[in-house]
Image (cartoon, rainbow, N blue to C red; front, side):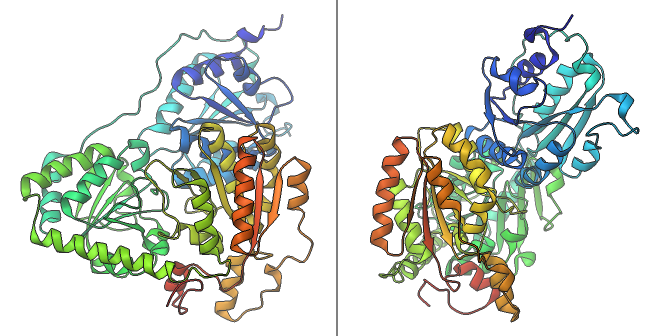
Length: 567
């Protein structure tokens, strides 16, 4: 006798994941009813059906980033699993809490040409924190709850649970309701905190860098308080953006490749760097002269982060918010709240912020440059919108403050160090589904938009009302830029076929516009605001010049003044 739906092991899986704190299952339906089907009837779970597993992984990332809860990716053995790996590579890079639940073919088929059998654990092991094969029904609920625990605790990340076919055909194990899995928080060693505080209060120019690890900890207020006590310039990484309001008097934008001059001078002249919740990946270090010679105080929940990119003078293991609070209290105990040196640092930071703003307001002329387009977009959607970005050549302008300035209530979602092309549109779908109360906007290049186009029907079905700004250079901008720097041919980087994306958008009931002047873009953004209230997608294309290159890229490549900015 076959099991009724509520008796099936998949129902136990769905219920266990809901109890543990997950609220979204993303995937494609399998041949037989599986996890997605069970999730549809499980209180507390939502199901997001996508057209492509790669897009599904990105949607899970976007949803987890906005909701603050782990997301589940449902796949099956074989091509389904393999197709998701690119998105899981990005999830691993970002430290996104994603639980992958997949199936394993019957044991009798392994080694004998079993249909769609693949060694999933071996394929995913470099990307996962933990993988486990459930071969006995009695392991099922334990493995799933442990997977959620590991996805959200320590350095968040990807976990993999394979469920053997035999388990899915056996009687369902008993499921007992259980409380949500808690995110564990712990403070750093008190004496090491005091040592770090002495270094910070004795510094000539301390600098604070907040990373993506600060967000799940809710560390924004604590990090801001600490920077204020130190009168220290406050930067973030790309993943950490939105941690603090970028209009705060000490906020100086992003580090590394995305630093806007003259803020790079503060990074160059700093003697003590406090990095909180960041692995200090290559793009965070890129163009940061002398970082290896500075005194580094490094805070993270994962001990494996320390001694990776740089060797810290003090390593503080603990929750970003708790440790920032400990440091703030220790700084108060070490030094008076107001000092002459602190006042001088505040004045210098204010001058740097004024220089950053003057540089770009002076370049805001009658032409529709990328910085002008981004300014108009933000004026339309406000500083509190959810901003999803890719990492192509021209859209990297959006990483530069004050070209774009986000508030501490904003949600900013970026690819990680892998910078997968096509990340943005499916990530925007997941993000918008997590919070329909705010606008969700995507900034990307034309190549990235085409690669992520499989997510467009899903956005339409869900009436998400996305706004997409496509910066169109008719090809792949970053390879073209690097070839130009090397004097190499760029023919292969250019698209010659007519673009098909607008037709796809319109076929799905969305709006399209192609804008070449600021006035045209302003009008298109007004239309997009109305379309958002109707749940319709708007795609606005702005043609861009090859030489409209972000200031950070110009700075790192030392190629002269940035286009679209004052020299």
